[in-house]
Image (cartoon, rainbow, N blue to C red; front, side, top):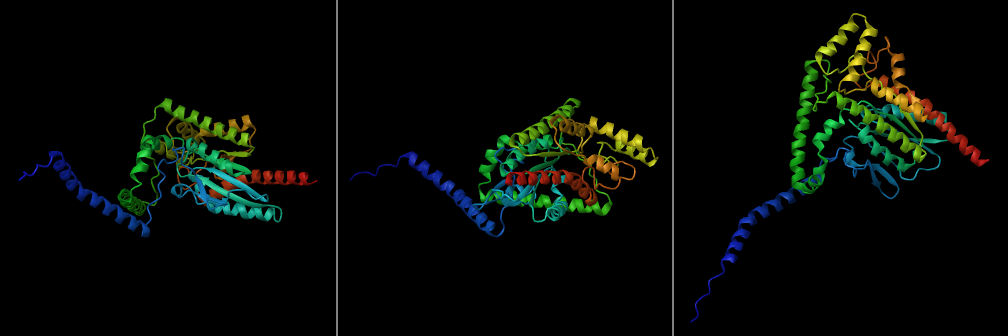
Length: 389
């Protein structure tokens, strides 16, 4: 009788490993399946992984064979838009580009469309695409502009200058090198579920803290907590980068034959964010004593020397210089705001915080650009008439 051969030890080791891992595999499969079922009723939150720093991240995506729409991942930063990929010949298509100051213009832009439609009734139809991205500065607006020009816009309006010191701070947290890993991890529904659960809790907490602050005080503290310590040299580097980015935008439009209108950027000089309470108090004291010119001069000088979360004279000087250099139309929003304020100091009545207009100010902003749009509509119609002769 033959004796039973002993099993090789390596087979026993493999079997032990398989049985040890099996519960973990089952747990992962159950968690993943459960998370995917949950997503049927509660879709995952849209996520712009690269915050616009990722060159593969597009603002618009296809919506059927003929239309494009705002990328759902971008809806956390941009208003929803939907329009024909190929522009009809009787449409005058307008894009307005910028940060949150542009993002919040939806109501005023509808008013612009109504006025244009009435003025050119029966001669032309109009579309306006709001490409205002929350906290977007010129660094991220350059690729947005390049994408926008694919859709045959008749004019591009640019109002940008408040976020030049925001994007460097955000770049520290985005970490573009990890984007492929993030996208791989969040291909898992279970990982998305944990991510969204955490995000919703954080959002709820932010709402709670904001509401509590509003209840405690009638004014919200808009003082930006700086996440990055800029040196004086880096302040100048940011200003130089702003000039370069605007120049790229102008030259890109010129190369594509798309007219561009630059807008100077109005900034709240009445209640500015000067970085420290002492500097803000000094400005407030000057205004309260009636020393309006001295107070405004102090604020303007301080803003251009510090890392600022609102536009300064440095940005507006660049805008005006580039408009002269390239011969582009200039919508002088800052001058319009100065003329409309009781003491000629932007922020006394037209602003809701350090950089955002209130409703009246938003109307002023849009109407400052409007004459340039009207001129370009007339020019297009004249060219069309000449071509038909």
